[in-house]
Length: 80
Image 1 (cartoon, rainbow, N blue to C red):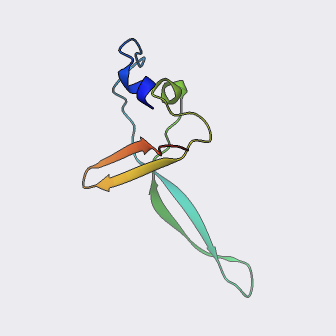
Image 2 (cartoon, rainbow, N blue to C red):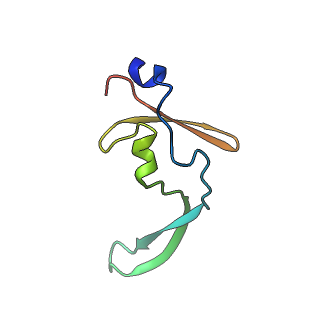
């Protein structure tokens, strides 16, 4: 982790990204009949792209997400 923090030469292709919060639809079914009773929608945010690796996030790494009003802070779990 120290090597990544002290390297002044690395650069992310675009430091600021814009996304829109979408939704994920969940199907709820009747246990007896298996038929759909209703769908519910939940806010969803999908982050993807090579810029994640440029920022130090690679496939399979664990992250911690700190949730605050109006912002999410995503950090790598140390020693993961």
